[in-house]
Image 1 (cartoon, rainbow, N blue to C red):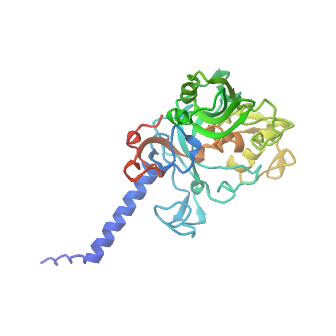
Image 2 (tube, helix red, strand yellow; image 1 turned 45 degrees about the horizontal axis):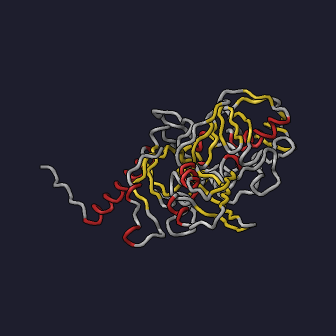
Image 3 (tube, one colour; image 1 turned 30 degrees about the horizontal axis):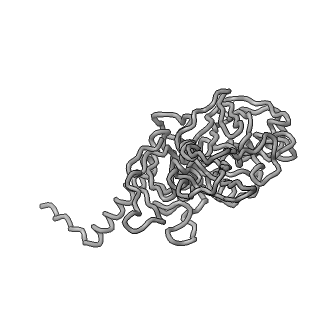
Amino acid sequence: MSEKKKKKSPTREWWDSVLFAVIAATLIRGLFLEAYTIPTPSMEKSLLVDDFLFVSKVHYGARTPKTILQVPLTHQKIWFTNIPSYLDWIQLPNYRLPGFTKIKNNDVVVFNYPGTPLRPDPYGGHAEYPVDLRTNYIKRCMGIPGDVLEVKDAVVYINGEKLPEVKGIQKYYDIEFNTNPNEKIFEKADVSVLARRGEGGKYFYRINATAEGLEEIKKYDFVTNVYPEILPKGDTSSIYGAAFPYNSRLFAFNRDNFGPITVPKKGDKIILDEKNAALYGSVIATFDLNKNAEFRDGKVFIDGQEIKEYTWKQDYYFMMGDNRYESDDSRFWGFVPEDHVVGKAAFIWMSIDRDASLFNKIRWKRLFNIIK
């Protein structure tokens, strides 16, 4: 006669249910979909602060875990504390599972922020966290591996051709009026006013606007001039002028005039002359999967030996925010390595306006919008 199976206690059943839920949520989060919140305005007007979105891991292929000693369903800290949620004692090799598409120009991508060793980095980049726990950023991919990218007067060109701008890109303009305008015109056009001044009977407004918003403002007959706020080519003197790779002698790049540069592609070989070493040396030493690489005195060393040519070990991407003048992106810290890519921004499932009244908190028109 078989023994009667012992019934689980309520506590044991509760524990089994919680364990199953944690394992299932961890697998879904790691392999399929993960929820993110937009914390900053760097992608406005395409994505707004407090948009809640799902990021697809299956589009580009999910990464296998690298930092395995971690509290489940956390990122850098344990919830509501400043206590690290992980131990970096064990770091596994990083692999990417097959996806069903590649990153394309103008895709909106979530990635772990790499930072750059060429400037002080307060944002949780390569010096602070393992790859898979670096701070999550979301930007639009401008350049894919092998692309020759150039920004000319704030317009992006890829391989000599103008990259089509998506709806929602914002830039700064100075608008001149011959009368003091009612500021409701800016609200109606969904345009942000940054500064205002009067001078010699004229009124000047510095605005941050999409192309559509700018056209709405230009319809008024009391608009006399529009001045795009563009840094001249070679101007690296202002706080906005300094750009990657921070070598104005060899590369007088700024936020509005940058390049041309070639985005690194796996398998491509480069000659490490003075310019290429200055542009790519820190990337080779910090991100390209080399154990004993250094970039110092303008030269690249592997295992203590200076190298004169180099073959890339992984792909890289050039990312920019849609809010072009309020985004910390590849113009300022360089390329995104392939092993830092988290996934493709898929759709908005909730959007909250924290400044609105109680009954207008939810931005209903944004719910379940596909991200383009």
